[in-house]
Length: 123
Image (tube, rainbow, N blue to C red; front, side, top):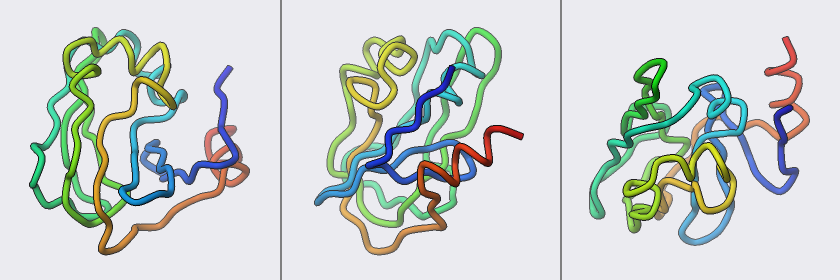
């Protein structure tokens, strides 16, 4: 059963976004469950520019390779090296230790509330 923390924002592509300066984001519990066991992360480097709604990385699981879409436009300021070294963190704790990137923000893409994301994933 997927969980949707109310203090986060979500995208239709199954990323979550924590407000802050910088913001942190990763993939949702729903996405990690659908992917299965995550075995490899390809993420942008610190200093890279990312664009809201555009692909900014890849997540490889035992089932498939999926694209990671950025919920914001801005500059990557931190990559979760612990998750790169141990991608299973994304499965075991997607909203905590399994965060993927932190970025400064110049713009955000379309975001959903937890309730809106729950409706999206219920169908």
